[in-house]
Length: 193
Image (spheres, one colour):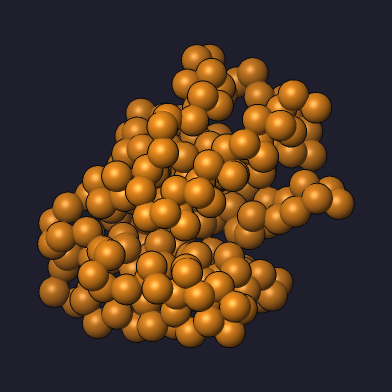
């Protein structure tokens, strides 16, 4: 029950940050859980969701060391969907691998994971998570800033905005614009502060 509260608090803080477009104070769940390299996190029905939310927190904070730890723990589950039985889903685990890889500037790994996440979220009908993946993938491409990335990133952002609008997620659609993206060559995590 304590972890459930911690998990929901982490998710709420991320949602608040995303709605307000700025980073809130550091979530206490990340340093607490990272102290032992996340080994103390119980391996149960909430484990993948917990690691996914912690990976998103590490990405939001630009915490490369913790993103690397979480990446290694999530890697064997990249072809799965993370969900808590009877509670909620956070979509494809591959999205969190993409976020972690982006935080570590491992662009090729991030691209592969985001591609896998797009496919999985579309296949299982996880449309909010598909839109989130499209936006995150676009942010990664814009941060990587190679010549061929710009057009793909713009298309992904357009797709994300369209999906957000169809789902009634208008604030998310507004956020998924080019103006909110990192400057050319900047780390995707540094743009989220």
